[in-house]
Image (cartoon, rainbow, N blue to C red):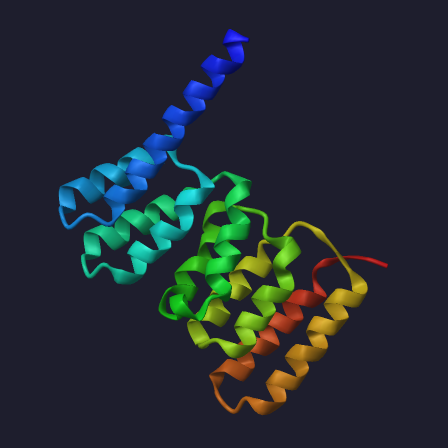
Length: 185
């Protein structure tokens, strides 16, 4: 009985800590924000990812943006993948999409189950989004269903036909990278 009480108290303390860290991310005091970012390196949880992305979006301080980016690039916890995908799919973060997508190849987080999300973002996004998507897909070491990849190639073919810019060449590169993926028939 005392073990579960002690465990519950420890969990409550950890939740309070992470909530205080997240609160400090929105502080006007730059020193407090940097302390919160350092604390996230030690005690971070997936719940802090979206507040970090929000801060990345809203701060005009380059040193804070750099610290957040470095922190995100160092992520190793696979549980953050879904939160990052939610951010990537949210147009609220449209200016940060290249950075958010690059997290996956910078940190080596496995995002292979979201390949269709990345292809969709490459098609609708700007050139920089496409470059980052190409880097992510180029680093995949997973096996994919043939039908899913064929559908994605079809989507890319349609997009390539409607593009008249340098982006068309980038989409062609992404499509050829799909050809090199391991397929399960």
